[in-house]
Image (cartoon, rainbow over all chains, first blue to last red; front, side):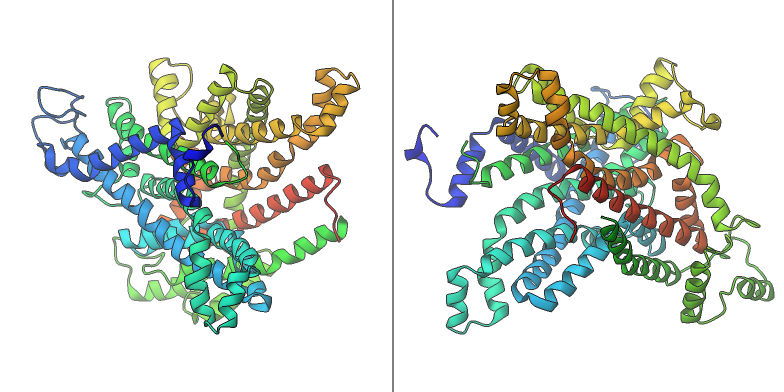
Length: 289
Length: 307
C-alpha cells in the first residue's frame, strides 16, 4: 500500500476504499446501476406498454423509425418495454428471495453457533440433510402444483438458498462467541437473543454481504430457469427467463427476441458476480492490495 | 478408509429418508390429481382407478405402503404411461441423460483444467486475462441462453449440426447439448484450477524441486498437478449434480428423450409415482456422487485421515 495515510480507519471505510480502486468493480457497479435505473424508470418513459398489442407490427425487427427499438414479439408487443418490465420482476425476485434466504440463514446460523452443544449439532444436521436434497426439483414441483404465483417463487427460492448462509454465519459466530465483548455482555446479564441480535449479527455482516451479492445472481438464474420451463412468471407479466424462453422458440425468424433479453440477463449476472468477487477481495484484510 | 465409506453411507440414510418423506408429501398434498382430464370421468370409473392405484387409502397408509414398496426396490406403476413401471421409464431415460451428462463432465474437466493451467502458468499475461474474462462470462451466461444461440449459429446459419432431436445418440446430435451443458462448468473448473495451481506453484516444495534442477514439465506433472487438482476433485460431486439438474433444461430445449424430460412432463401431468421415482433416483445419485468425490479427495490428499 503506497498511500497508507489516505486509508480510512474503519473496516467498512477501508473496504469501500479498496473497492473504489478496483476498476472492474466500479465498471460492474456502473453497468448494474444503469440496468436498474432503466428497468425501474424505463417503462414509464418509453412510448409503448409491455402488454399493448400492435396489430400492424407483429414480429418486426429492431427499428428506430417505428419506435420499437428492440422490435416486437409474435403478439406484436414492444420488446423493449417487455425487457424492462421483465427486468423489474427478475431483479425483484433476485433481491427479495435473497433477503428471505438472508433472514432465515443468518438467524439459523447465529442461533446454532451461539447456543452450541446439542442444539447446534441438531440444527446443523438439519442443514446437512437439506443440503443433499435435489432442491431444484422441489422448486419445480412447488411451482407446478401450487399455482405459478410470484410470492411462492420468492419463498421457494429463498427456502433453498439459506443453507450456505447458515453455515457461513455459524462458523463466524463460533469464533465470535469466545471474544471478550460477548463475554462482557453475558457477564452483565444481557439475554441470549439480545446478544445474538445486537452483537453477533452485526459482526458477521461482512461475509454475509459478500455472500448476498453472489446469491442474487444465483437466485435470478433459478428464477429464469423455472420461467424458462414455463413454470414461473405467467403471461402477460413477464421476466427475463420468460422472454428468453419465447426467444428460444422463435429463434429462426426472430433472433433478437433471444439475444436482447439474454444480453440483459447475462450482463446483470456478470456484473453481480464481478461485484461479489471484488467485495470479497475488499473485505478480506489478509489481502494486502 | 473403508470404515469411513461405510460410516458415510450409513449417514446418508436419514438424508434419504428426509428426501422420500418431503418428496412424497409435496407431491401428494398438491391440489389436482392424475385423473383430472378435460373429459370428466364417471365417478364409478374414477373410484375404481383410485382403488387400483391405491389412492383411496388414507395418506399415511399410502406413505407407509410406498416406503414398503421402496424397500423392495419397487417404484410403482406410472399413472400416465400406462403399462409402464416407473423403474422401466427411468431405465429408458437414464442411458440418454447419462451419456450427455458424462460427456459434459469429461469435456468440462479436460478443457477447464487445461485452460486454467495455461492461465496459471502465464499469470497476468494476455492469455491469462483472456481465459479469466471468458470464464467469468461463461459462468454468467445461463445455458438456456447459450443453447439456443449455439443452435442458431451452428444449426440454422451454418447448417453444420442438427438443431435438435436425439437421432439414436449419433455424435452429431450430441455435440450441441453437451457443449451447452458443459460451458458454465468449463468456466468454473478453469477458475478453480488457475487459483489452486497458482497457489501451489508459489509454495516452498515447488521451489525446492526447482532448486534441485528439475525440468518445468516434471515439476508440473510429478509435484504440482496432484496438489493443484484437489479443489477440482472436490468440486466434481457438486458438478455432476449440477449437470444432472442442468440437463432438465437442455433436454427440453433439444427435445432429448432423457430423465429430465420425463420429470418435467411427469410434474405437469401429475404423474405422482414417476415424479417421485425420478426425484428419489436423482437424490440418491447426488448423495453417492458426493461420497465418491470425498473418497477420491482422501485418496489424493495424504493429509486427510479418517478416524
